[in-house]
Each structure stands twice: as C-alpha cells, then as structure tokens.
Image 1 (cartoon, helix red, strand yellow):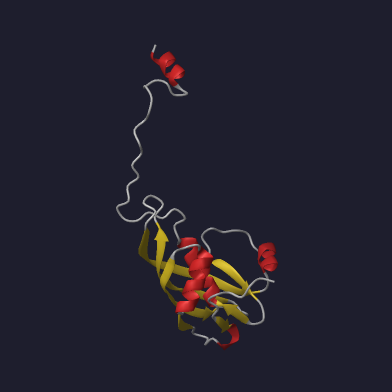
Image 2 (tube, rainbow, N blue to C red):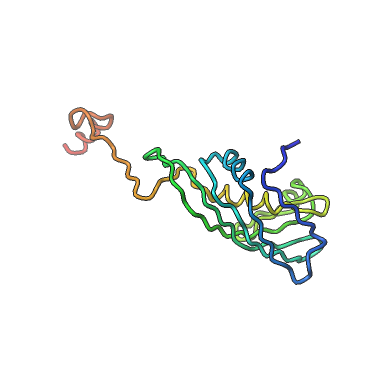
Length: 171
C-alpha cells in the first residue's frame, strides 16, 4: 500500500455541476515542507492551483487550469540555493477505473490530455497538481546568471586521445 499523499484534495465527481466549476486549492506550510522533501528540493514557499472541472461523460471529468509554485532549488553550477516562480498549465482527464484499465484501453496520443484513473467516485486533484509540478521541475537547475567556467586544458596541445588521427588528417 502506498503512503498517503502529502497534498490530498479529493473531489467527488458526481457532485460537480453539469456546466462545470472552478476549484482553487493551496498547500499549507506543513504540506509544502513535506512536498519539498518528496520532490528533492530545498523549499517550497507556494503551491496553489486554480482548475476548471467539467463533467464530460459517465464519471469522466476534464480539468484545465494553472499550477503556481515558488520553489527553492540548488544551482548545479554554483551550488547555491535560488528561488524561482513557476506557472504551469494543467490539462488532465480524470476517468473512473484503474491504471491497468487505462493502459489496456488506450493507444498513446502525445497530443491528448493525460488520463488519470480514479476509484470510488472521487479523484485526487491535489496529487494531480503535485505530479504536474514534479514534471515541470528542472532536474539540473541553474540560477539566473550562473556560468560554468571550465579550467583550461592541461598538457601540451596535440596529446589527446585523437591527436594521432588529427595529425594523420593534416598531413
């Protein structure tokens, strides 16, 4: 059994209005601290989302909105922490069933919205927001203005592993 999500916001699909509705969710300080640890970042000062939820079929809900986050990551060049603001579009379809049902029933279309299975009539919008953020985080973050300065080559020129080939080509 998997652990409980740090930022769970369960929505009952059957209670959504036919025309849809807009939902705004925000993580608490404790949730943000737990998520920062889970995502391997230094800190998270903000995580919120504003999402339009529209029923489009038997238990199927289309979700479209934006995730906003302010995270602190460590620069891979300077090794100094830096904060960045993110605004990430969110487009998903929540569909009743299991992960195995979705995999068996679909062909992969890179242009379509990602489908998220749910069971028991309720889907977890909070966990979908966290997954959207996780995919948007840069795995090799660089702070603005960070420059990687490589040391000058050592040793005499023309002694590298391809020096023989270079001499042959020239001459």
